[in-house]
Length: 471
Image (tube, rainbow, N blue to C red; front, side, top):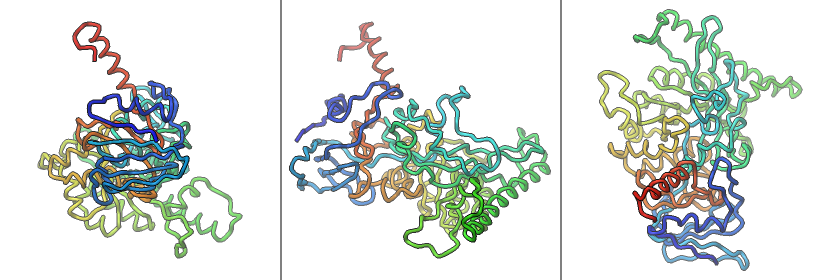
């Protein structure tokens, strides 16, 4: 058995382990992806933060073939089959957490905001449910390894999340496609995809006119456009339901890719059976109270499973959210107060209010893809304003996994779930915490990225100038 001991005095501990798994180039955007796990791994003497249950001091965790096989209390050791040649990692003084999950991103669809050729998140047209975000992913995006360095190993990727009105041409981008759930390492988009279809995305319109200095459209024109947009959405879902019924009555009915893509978001026409796939959520991008309540009423009208994304005013309509059984993805804690009379900490304390109301919610960073690594800091801001640390950790692990439909395989450290986890020297929401090692489906992931390479480059510059030592 190979034994590796981690220490706070060993900043290159990752480099000592990686040769056992793969030879990875330093430039992650051009580097080799991690190969499948071929040997059992046993991590012990660590603090195991299961999220779903108790925290285990000096515990152990075993995983093989990409799946957690055991979570062990202190003093218990696993038995391995002869010839399995397990890798043992002594993680004394360190912590094991499930990999963090970013539930609302455009990772892999955008690289540089100022370069149009690197932006691939928006489809033309008004209703495009046949679009799947995963298909457009760039597996060699430099932003994936940068994001992984913060412990974020899984993400939901959304197609374009704004809609526009073009005069007589009508709205564009009301249904931009379907979200996908991805792992942040793989050769192709198929390798990255955990769920290529995680649910339908709907940009729900504002439900009342905006009166502001920057708005050049009169209220009457805005009201007309709002009605046109909602009517277009209603028509799309009515047509999809009619298509579903026609297909059920006549299997030879012509296929329409648009409506075929919406079927799993629609309610079943018969009593669901254990073998039937579950109804997928519909992700409504909605921020204002009127938007949120309008989206919930729309979901009820069409029998949809709503998840509200953005959800800035979600604490103002908790009863409606509970009645609808809706989940909430808070876009960010990094925003200015919305109204002139709003408390300065309005968004910092929003998670507490949702938690107290019993609403299933989770955190998104609200950042551009280049800064998705800041997700732990967005959650930490809520902790600074009173949210319990355990609730904040759950909001970036098990809660987003549940909202996204992958809670049975990700988000906590339990036997039978994917071995997607991180080893850290402290709580992952602390800005000073280092992620020493990461595994995705049991594969050891190189945490080198463009930032770490540049840091070494310029450290060498200052060594040459004699301004820093040789260590």
